[in-house]
Image 1 (spheres, rainbow, N blue to C red):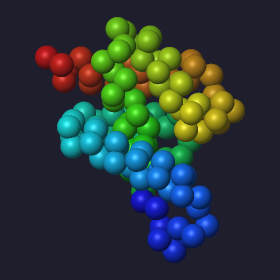
Image 2 (tube, one colour; image 1 turned 90 degrees about the vertical axis):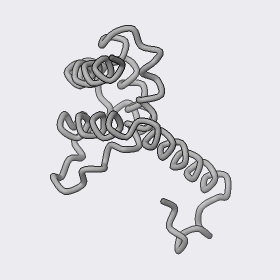
Image 3 (cartoon, helix red, strand yellow; image 1 turned 60 degrees about the vertical axis):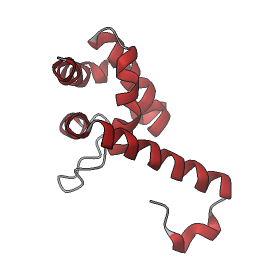
Image 4 (cartoon, rainbow, N blue to C red; image 1 turned 30 degrees about the vertical axis):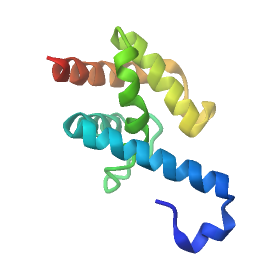
Length: 119
């Protein structure tokens, strides 16, 4: 959430974009609560960008909120690996996100969650 104490330092367009992203993530969380928790949890366990400090279990919620809406456009775990890589590049930059292969195991886990939820 945008911190009100720093609101004067943030351009209004950025504040609006942050609030919009937070609202969209919350819509995804409410529409798919179990899947959201499972996807975020899988990201936390795999920790592709090494931000798991054992206490920040919601650290990957933002990424889960942008990946879940794109699951319906994937036909396989391999396609999902590309989506994961794209989203992590978007959130963290190419250097931190690393190579696409880094997302192979995570994509397999999320694909299993997605296909189980669809049945």
